[in-house]
Length: 232
Image (cartoon, rainbow, N blue to C red; front, side, top):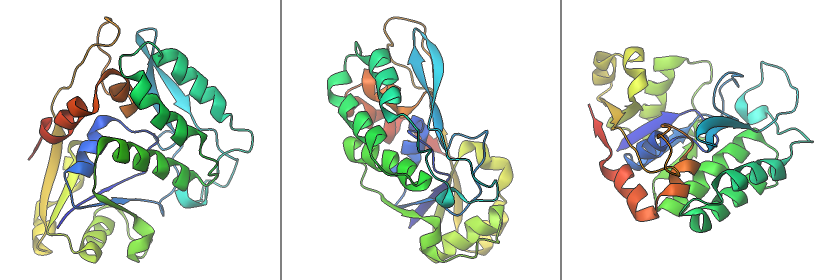
């Protein structure tokens, strides 16, 4: 049983989907604190050859609230984000196939932040044919008081994990011996450099999965997902 655990991100970059596709069970944290400077409710897209940020505005709430307790702002203009992305990518070669998926996810009437962001991940997985089971962290019944590695190990045990796969950026956060003590093999996913034409301009890497969808057919994206990384 291969398991991965990540924070929720709105239309995350392709490495996030490589991680989902590499495991049997993908756990998304919903009972963690919202962080203002993270990527939970924002991401980057390509506009005029440079990266720009699109953001889901949130209702003003206590900083102590978990992601699952935060809400999208009542005046959040979904149509504005759709218009920004449409204008940026309308000339992209795979706009016709991919943009309806993006528009559907952005325009969903869900107001709960976790559910709204979670839906964007699920819609993209469906479009790309990723069949990994996705669950929320709270559904596994682990005490939220646990932190960092202890929380990950507890979630792995609850999920029956024999292998835990983490993004490469977490190498310094985890101790392989601690995982071995729990009979869990610790792996890290390292994404290979991925590049593709973007309107003939110099390539801008690590944008939202939206950019990948606009410039590549599903078959090509599947190649990125299946062979564009290594586990170390």
